[in-house]
Length: 477
Ligand code: NAD
Image (tube, rainbow, N blue to C red; front, side, top):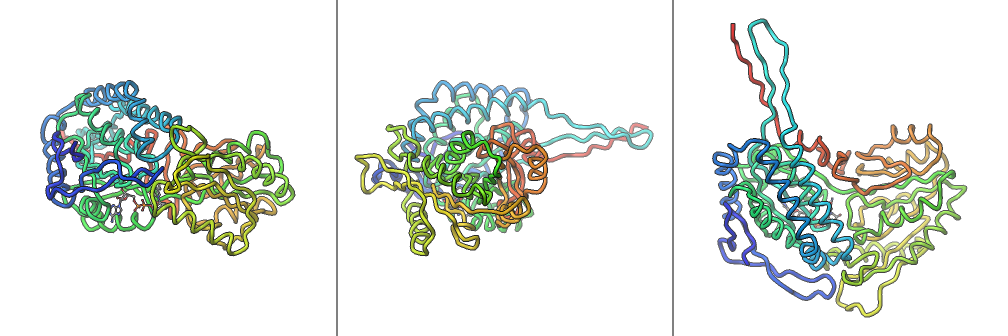
């Protein structure tokens, strides 16, 4: 089946090229996707504009919302099937894949039901004037998403955009886009007019670059690496197009000496091993107050050693790394840490019977990692946790905020005043206290500070981000 959706039709790439899709569990090719490029992007942008000028642009907010909620229902009914696709494409355990699909449905339910609840304002002005501020869509929106949570990202980026009446062009990741293709099919089945969503599979440097540079787009949103985020911002800036960037993190878990150990340890371990650590908001730095550093890291090490890695159907704690490039990158961090003498406190285990060609990595806990070491500063994007001691609250803040990133942080303390002080002083877009949500639910605004990017997705704020305003001034005398 062709994998480009343009103007309501499934098509192959204009030049007929394809990309092999590789199973991360054994490195074998199991299907292909179409390799869209500039001509396909151009057709997709034109189709989106046509939808805005046609049936989609004329639809009421209630009608749009109904389609999105119907799609939410369809996702729930096809959850097992889509979870299978997602697990095969990414290697993630079946239970995790199923949870991801439930989350996608939730995005469309949440934003579908919100579509007609975004109201404008009336502004008191001069006598004889009526001034209204109305919310309007940006127009054609460009969506570039990564491979770590392909289905969830489909929901996170498209549900608010469509709810606000934009017409979208999605460029999913070449490394995992099969769930998105199935979801797009179901969205058409739910009644989305042709051209309101267009999907162009392909490489980032071809289809992605062509999309962000296209003069016909009015807004772009990107999730991925900081390096590509800067390219996206440069490309959109050339046409004065606004963009939202979500570029990952090096999120700290700050553990004080009054921590509830039983509660904290499993959550801290899960926050870095979930999805094999390939989560932008993974808790990848473990900062522990000096006087409990040894005892607490010992407890985390015991839990770490029990983490098991396997194929999706084994349904263990984590699956493989998504592709060879990332596999080598993650192993590079681990090998470098060992070679430079950073103590390895624990490793998880690979299940029996895995293919030696698969991209499986046993999770690793290191500590105490020197504060300037690459493992303490760089985003690994794998199941690697860097533990470091801190002296007191000021030192904890210094260390936590020393990162170039600022996406999410976790704080573990029973002291209420300290909880408030930490929340106020941490430079991250989300702060979790005595819990950790790795981005949290659909309802919670999410996005970074510093090099983690800018703009907000999720929650009601996404509806503002994915729309703009028009001020209408009427003189009635
Ligand atoms: P990437 O940034 O290259 O890819 C993300 C998306 O951007 C993909 O859809 C890709 O096709 C597209 N893209 C690539 N080049 C582009 C360009 N020039 N113009 C427009 N779009 C382009 O990420 P990657 O190579 O898959 O992973 C590398 C690193 O990125 C990881 O190690 C990790 O640190 C980070 N990452 C972060 C997230 C996140 O959720 N923040 C997700 C995936 C990867």
